[in-house]
View 1 (tube, rainbow, N blue to C red):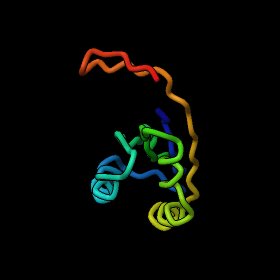
View 2 (cartoon, one colour):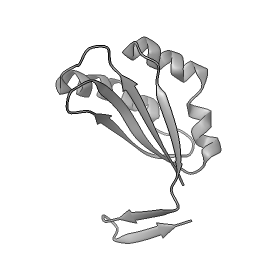
View 3 (cartoon, rainbow, N blue to C red):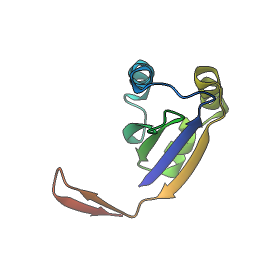
Length: 103
């Protein structure tokens, strides 16, 4: 599994209510994306950094998301360049199903 963390540094902080509204507006874009297991939107306490934590089946499927078109969407929506970091996730603890997953 691959975990991707995206970050968008805002020029001005925004309130969490505004961030929630933006997130709810864009969330449907991530439904049924090939290889995307889960996405969690993130918001820093000071309102200056937004982003997401994505869990993917593979790096290839993840890389298919973070295209120049996606980067342009982020630039237009948030007026900033996104940071994208990829991480191998060899072990995952799932407390909902009470399982430990390992590739």
